[in-house]
Image (cartoon, rainbow, N blue to C red):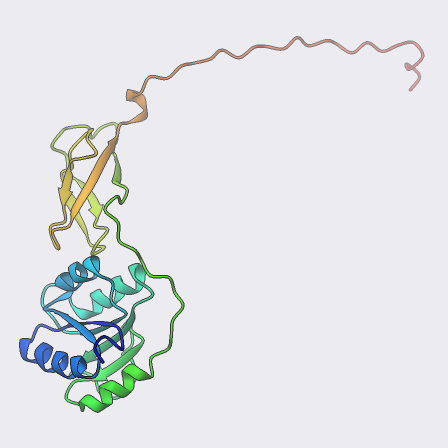
Length: 218
C-alpha cells in the first residue's frame, strides 16, 4: 500500500546508506526522498514539507546538528529522528533538536519501531510561499555608499553573512553565500535624508486665577 505512512526525507552524505534505508522504508509504505546534506535537505523541504525527517548528524556543509535546529525553528510540525554511529543508546544526544535517536548499525526493525513510537505532534507546519517579505536593511547616516556591506540572516538556513544588497528596488536582492537562496532586500534610508514637515504648535492662553473676596478666608 504505497504512501500509507506519509512522506519521509532521509538526509545522509553516504549514498549507500540513503539507498538502503530508502528501499526498506519504501517497501513498508513510505514516500521517500533523500538529500546528501543539510542544504540539499532544506531545498527539498522548500519544495514539499515531509511529515518525517531522518538525518545523520555528521555531514559536510551543513551538519545534522544545524539542520535539525533549523527544522525545529522553521518547520516545527516535522517529526525528526537523528541518527549517528558516534553515539550509542536510544536517548537523543544532548544539544540535538530531534524527537528520537537511531544508532547507525542497528537493525532496520529497530528504526521502524522508533518511527512508530514517535509522538503525534499538533504543531502547525510552515507553508512556503513565493511572496515572502523582503529583508529590510537600515543604512546608518555614515554608511550610505552603494558598495557598503551589511550582515543579513538567510531566511532559509538562518546563517548570517556579509552581503552587498541592491538599493531601492524590491525586485532585486542578493543570494545566501551558503545555501544560495535568493534574498529580496529593501534599503531604508536614514531619517535625516527624509523630508520632514514641521507643524508649529499652537500656544494656549493662560488665564490667571483670581481669588474672590468670599474665598480669601480659605
